[in-house]
Amino acid sequence: MKFLLLFALTIFFGAASHAVLPNRKTSAAAAKTVGVSAPLARQTELIFGLALPVGNTDGTPAGVKSTLSGFALKASYAYGIADFVSVYAAQEYSDLSADVKNPSSLVTPSFKVKSAGISDTTVGVKGVINFEKTHLYYDGSYVFGIADKPKSETSGTTVTESAVSTRPKIVLTGGGGFPIGYTSIGALLTYTLFQDGEIETSVSGVKTSQKNKSGTGLAWKVYGQLEMGWKAGLSYEEYKTDEYNVVTSGVSTITKDSTDVRISAYGIVPFGSANEFMIEVSKLDNKEATTTKYNLYNIFLTYRKIF
Image 1 (cartoon, helix red, strand yellow):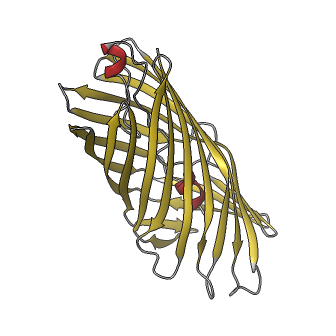
Image 2: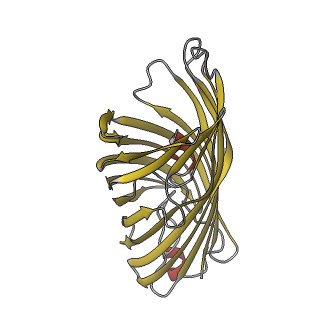
């Protein structure tokens, strides 16, 4: 049931440009597009994000229908060591739930999955390398649960999960963009190296340990946007998680590879001195879901401050 985190806690931050970006240093530090930003030397960057997932996955008439609700928060702090190198840390918090209906089950035709609390912590290095018009971007980070450990408890018709991911991971991102008149286009490529993880499960008081083995993932994203001081754009991205082994009570099974798709429309508006606000609406889907319809959406609100 970790799809709750998958759809609520991915790609929170972007940023913007417009109006009052008073000097070269501030303008150069403006975000290039959603999720691509970094402070310059001796600058501080603060980012606060809110994600609101809504919708459902529908496998009816014979399958499972899950309705998602709740919210997720993320705060990030970065400091520029040089114009193209900054260090950062980010913390997530989520309060999510899914109402699940399974008409084919006589034992549990309906149940609820809840996931709330402090989620993943991220530490990393990132930077934007600015040229006369074009830019390159890189980001290397480690994502893990610092304040909690993965666990799942089933009591009656309620499943309560911790908010942290079941496998810590190393994430490497690179890409860039360039202008074409009053527009710009760009692309990003992300490689994920998942480490071994373990989740403690409890069903009616009976505890077991599930080990999730290491693996890899690969994502790519393309975008195009208007550059009018403010920005408005569209993006398309795919994220594939390769298959990996899961060991429960000494029995090994395979979790098959899965490819999530995200189509987004967004707007980025700067205001005041070095402040940026972003709104993004995303439609979520899964390539391997042949009998399930994904009616899932994410609304992201982000505020970014440089000083």
